[in-house]
Image 1 (cartoon, rainbow, N blue to C red):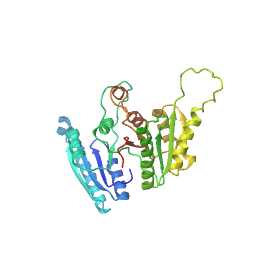
Image 2 (image 1 turned 30 degrees about the vertical axis):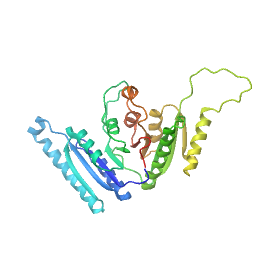
Image 3 (image 1 turned 90 degrees about the vertical axis):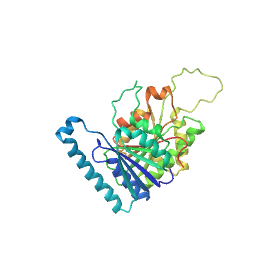
Image 4 (image 1 turned 90 degrees about the horizontal axis):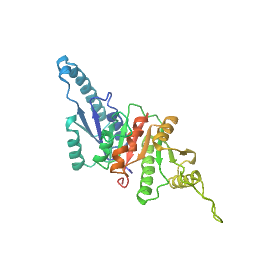
Length: 293
């Protein structure tokens, strides 16, 4: 993600304050990008219609939405907004992605009842399936001035696709940090092998897992001229350690690669994205391999 020219913001009536629109406006203002807002509202229940609660809530949302659009216009942002029923969301997004150029999608995190063994589709991962566009899932937390950007790197996987994904993760992290004047951190998580090993004769001992990952992560950091003091190597699952590290440093944005595994494994576990999002206090930028230019 070397530049952002066109941003798509997705907002829902059930999310208070429209954090996706606010942060999309902030990014569009800094990057001089065009901004398209798709606002999806849920049809009110018959009881709320009768009590006129839905009408009051919608009026408040429309006023705030109008204020945000006017604010963007005043900042010189080329912004447009369209309103749809949430039931048509998948069809609308499919049509939009087929007919428009987009460099970044900014959407509100959709909360989920977390369950490890679940075959149910989920809105966050479904959005990732819908397109190959980098997607930022945002929450209500405000970005700090000169905040922290944390990227998860997997150095153990040696396929060309994954090596390219690692480079794209770092490149995109650098770009986002440049836009927000943030500080870059890299996190590499690894698991020790559970296999039994036997001593061999006249063979040099293998490097420890830690030193091997440290060497690879340092090399990657050097290529991008990053601060070596901001490299973090931890033993354990990225699903657990990434939210912990993000909370520890009070990160504004976490950057994570996704979309390498599909089929039954993806159906059983869902994306790592879904698990991490539920534990994060901050925003998450999801990237797919080989799709960022």
